[in-house]
Image (cartoon, rainbow, N blue to C red; front, side, top):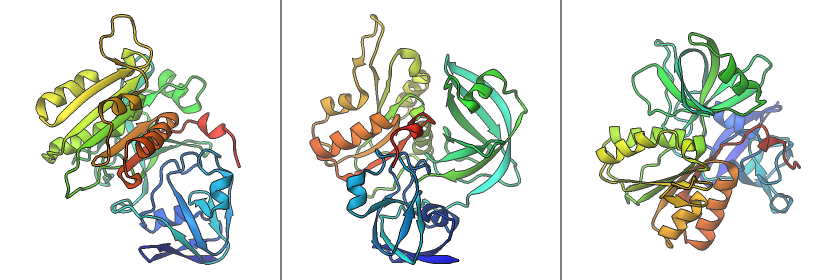
Length: 343
């Protein structure tokens, strides 16, 4: 049995099967609902239920609080329709542009960029290329049915290769394999593209802040590559934060882009620097606020640890005048993040 889902204010309609979440049905039918983790942990797919009944599955309280739920908000990735429903959600132009598909991927190279970060290059079928937007992600399909998500770190090109940056999570089922056992020519299965985190077109050419922590730099790198390829002249300042210098594992690459892109500025920030560090220190989003008290005329793209993304969203919108609709984010939720307080 299926139910009709109507999205306001666009008026777009699609159907959701009985055991299918509102988000999964939207992705299947190329309806551009905003989303990130698909696991009820990041809150990117939060929307308001206007009419009808749904069953809301287990989710993180930080993604949807009990107070928000009482106000009619739901998570599309955890909601299943029990009747025809009407939801209120701002659709993302381009989010459903490319079909989501499964495909084999051959590991073509594994390169250590830092003690706990590797760059994995995947060779995809040349006859069936993966089309995606810079900033989106793919999921590895593990043999036990589990999934692991990683953003493409390269802009879309004609090459059937994608670049991924993987941080080692000690005890992690997948990254333990990557760091200890993965070999070149190994075959993995992936599915994608997913996500609504990608560079928006902007006729006003507002200056942009790219905000990254750790391997949250990966989709930011893809966006920078896309901007350079398209001769995009918007002004952008990249704030990249880590604990220590090795966490900024492609600092030299960024500085090379600054030399080639006159409108790109780079601000590295370390929270626990060595004594010889002469750069900025502290939390990376506070460095933005120290430089720019007024963000009303900016667009912000933030990616990395959920605590950084949540703090930036809160402080930028509440203290710096950034419009909520000008904050775009992808919180990298780990399995540990997903094991927090649930509702």
